[in-house]
Image 1: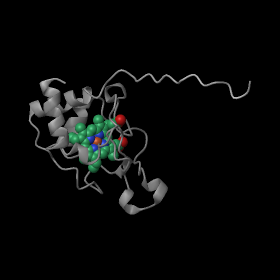
Image 2: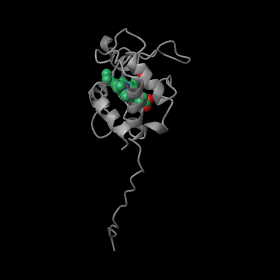
Image 3: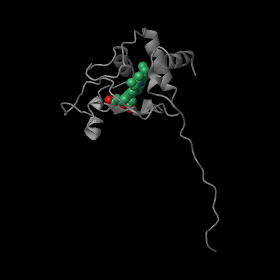
Image 4: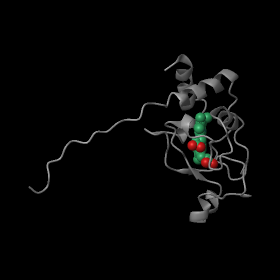
Length: 143
Ligand code: HEC
């Protein structure tokens, strides 16, 4: 990885606090969090996980997406409200857009311009060639 991507990795696991939720082999804890996304698009609001569980604390909570090949799947967030990874980092640097019911892990980060670029470079480094899995030849079950 480039020096910038390596710095981004340190930020991802440190100052940026991203790995609290984006962790493990595919960078997700498979849990639901409200990170303070301001709803865009035709829906006035999308209560996310609450629609299923009816638990008040899950209003606006969405499942943490994995980040492998993340450069290929924009626009980002459940409503596509962030066009680019740069915009996603700006969103997190501000501590999210909506305060109501937001996770205590989402707070303003105070990132420098270089640190923002480094985080984006790290996410770009989560790209790779798809793994080709070749299956062994099995003998026929019956002659
Ligand atoms: C409190 C848990 C939490 C933390 C901390 C967190 N994220 Fe997320 N992240 C989420 C959730 C949940 C979503 C999906 C939100 C939605 O769809 O509305 C998300 C969405 C994203 C997306 C968009 C993915 C997509 O496919 O749309 C990116 C990129 C991302 N996060 C990167 C980061 C980075 C970089 C950091 C650190 C600066 C970070 N996240 C910190 C939980 C978290």
